[in-house]
Image (cartoon, rainbow, N blue to C red; front, side, top):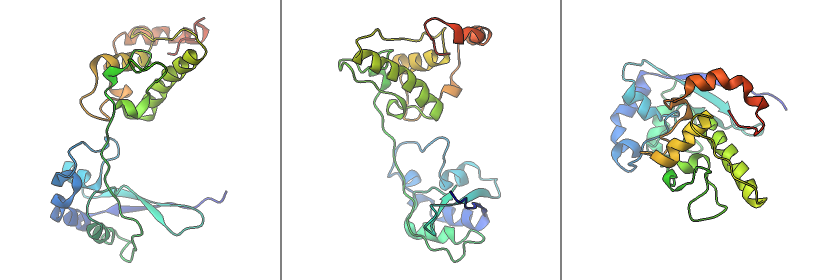
Length: 221
């Protein structure tokens, strides 16, 4: 497949001024949305508000495909009105004549409280239904994969009439994540990251990690 170049641009002082002038028209800052935005993909409004001393912010212009002239503007996610979006796009050096084909928009996350799950990630009271990933309010690929491994193994076990597995806190980091989810719950969607957990038994897991591949029960470490 042919490779297309991406381009680097910058959101500078003029773009910052436009956003500050229209900040209360943002769904996130004007009150139309009450939840928090994505933790690791902040909107340009968030960047301007939370990093007021930053002189500029990186923008990546990424082709949408081989047969289109559209570019995805990575780094300028926003919930501001379309007319404001077009104004600040044209404030980016190199995009003075840009034509916006599809405006950005805001989304609000929701989730099912994970305290309704068993440690197997099966929903209490609904046999054979397992939840994993963002539906449980977590964020990140690693967190989704970790839960997916356990939920997938146990869903297959249910279908095959086999015993479920539960990873304990002292066995695996996945065990810490799942135990925290089902016993403590979350304060908000996307509020739990495997990389941000305060792991107990961490020294034991580090020193014993070498024997994981040889465990007869195939434990996940």
